[in-house]
Image (cartoon, rainbow, N blue to C red; front, side, top):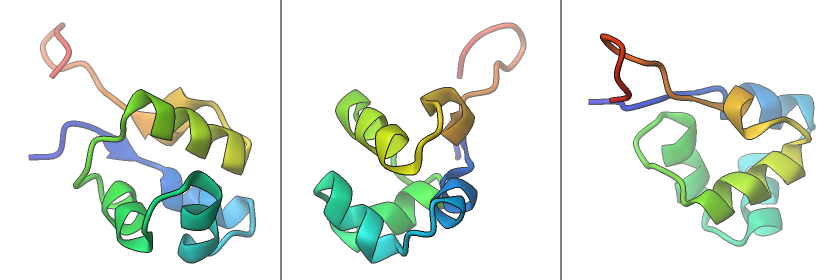
Length: 73
């Protein structure tokens, strides 16, 4: 079950970065970027900050954690 909605692919494309280029910039494998884009992997705070800086967008716009029933999932 996805706990968040990922907009990473859109922001990565806006930044004109391939998955591999973004992975190198933030120090992870390309497979990690694939999993983040499909919301199959929860990023650490450090990774989320690094990605935010690399694509030039706020963390909360890249990774959306919607509330469900008034509580965080």
